[in-house]
Image 1 (cartoon, one colour):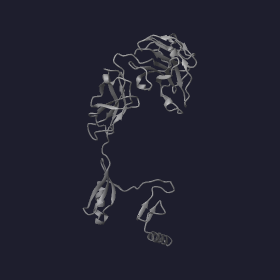
Image 2 (cartoon, helix red, strand yellow):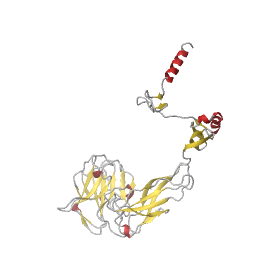
Image 3 (cartoon, one colour):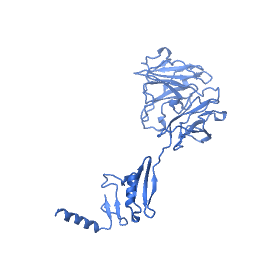
Image 4 (cartoon, one colour):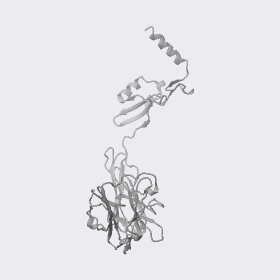
Length: 371
């Protein structure tokens, strides 16, 4: 005891000799009686944890509090109530500084548009509604937009509704469309944050034909079972000598042109190209080449290049990494068959919602296509 007492006295005298006290700092602000740093030497981060009390415990503090205790802080937790409170010494009561929300807003996720992107066709906004407190969904709102291109240029609202469908109009033809879903709960915190779907388009005229050839089926099968089917629904026969494929591999590696031969593909028919070691749907294959060799992270691109003209991208399966060269493609379609849905034609923007997905080595749809 004789040794401990002098130690305590020395420390008290040391504290008394300073106007300020610092925790995790050797140089507290001269304007502060107490300064607390969140860390010391960039280690041991921490916050200020004040007493957490319920109603009974808070009342016991009130019984002892005086006017001089005004400004005392507590974290009050009782049932669903969670509030930072301060003591009002004059009125002898507690005032809320901030209270945590007792109910959370609903959320919308996985927002996308389904339906044929064509004049007179009805589109549907698909989404997943969720609410932490399981509050039932109320009158969720949908705002449809059209734009000039896939980047959203000149976006225009088509109005807000509580109906999850929209019927395409003649004025929408050649535009792109997306929907904004704002989830609404029937109780509690009612309105959540709006979420936009990806853009879809371009919107076709009703009963129209495809603007160009397009990749109607993609088979990324086991081993060398690689097949690409190209469809013609342009309303006329097309000579394939002006078309070729390229494969975009990783970090800007775009392969040389893969010729589609000089065959003519009649309107409503398909042309099938496969790897020369492919063993699937061989009776439907029109030509084979070792150059058709891709994996689930390699984009396949279809180009049009007239004699003496400029090469133009008209269709793509996979991310357009040409926009951001030097980066790896994600694995978007590995060990899978993709078949273009009815009504979907060429697009230079890949959207997996335009395709139906089938199991590895499923080539049952190769050789024909319905547009």
